[in-house]
Length: 407
Ligand SMILES: Nc1ncnc2c1ncn2[C@@H]1O[C@H](COP(=O)(O)OP(=O)(O)OP(=O)(O)O)[C@@H](O)[C@H]1O
Image (tube, rainbow, N blue to C red; front, side, top):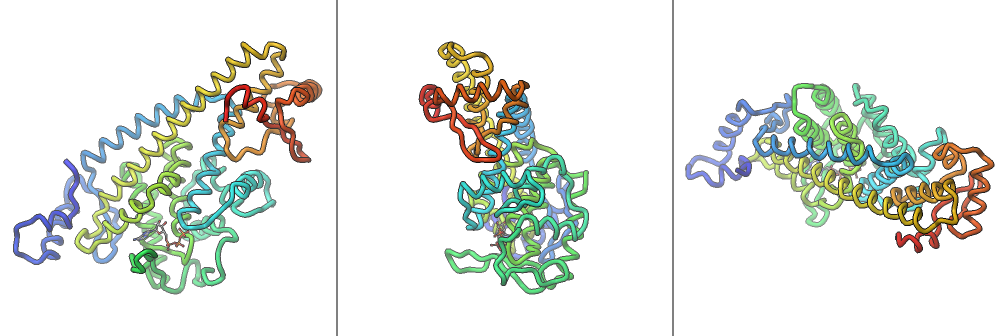
């Protein structure tokens, strides 16, 4: 049975009592229900909570099953493919989380941010955010203090703030801020105000994200809802909130899933915005169950798309490798293996900038001279493209991809 919001419940009731009064009574009943997960955080006189419905339990089971399949597929990826795909996912996460907020980035800017993210102290547009995403799993530590939250924000937003949006409070904003529906010119929400209220609510939020007595989906979704409700900044609340959500996701789900969520949200922007509105409707009294269901469905969509892409890419790679073994008989094994890893990079990373000679030496575990001779021969045959300087980068040429029918 589909979960009914309090607002709908009231609308369908035959009682003649005031709707607000009926909603209040239903809110108390749901909040005190055995299956209720309470946040302990109160907005507009109501505690944010969600019910662990059968639908949410079923979603958990589906998400866990999908994770097993993702894990199994990921474990079959060759090293260069796995590494390349990670960069690809980070690139699209970076591009889409910015695009959701109308922050445009070119393909080249993202490729360059990914490149710079590996080099300390060498910055370009979005490179600090790329660096955060690149290290999301190895440093997957949730913020523990208000200064941690501010510091994360500074990295996510690096250089993207217009002067009027620079923070002017002790740690966050000192003035009011609102979320607007630009198409209708209506105000959807006002962030908490004044700043001590932001500090107080974020301190409760910090406590909430570290609790270990709430099912992952409910904890992740409520955390995101609460963070966005607080809206601690003038600009960058969405991007910072979605980064924090990805950070929480890595604690329970694969890195691939965590890095795929913004793409799904970007494709379903109006459903995402509506999910906030629904909880904030005065008659829904901060019942965030529907918000949890929406986020759960987004995660499921992200997983399904990841599974399909992994299967498709692996199958193309396998066919190409077989074709080369059968038809490229004039090439030696090292030459064929070199082409295979260049294809892995091409297939698994849309933001590819090619592999360096060191990457190839490490991947094939062969010496400098052999790799040089191999690359010279493959270049003479037109199978590889050579670009850049210091370091030179090698990639699969159009000729090679045409022969293998890979776009
Ligand atoms: N009704 C709402 N209440 C609270 N937060 C909301 C609501 N609707 C959307 N949001 C969140 O606010 C984000 C956008 O907020 P806003 O328009 O103020 O942009 P911003 O603060 O500049 O952040 P961004 O970096 O995402 O542009 C959305 O991405 C979403 O996460």
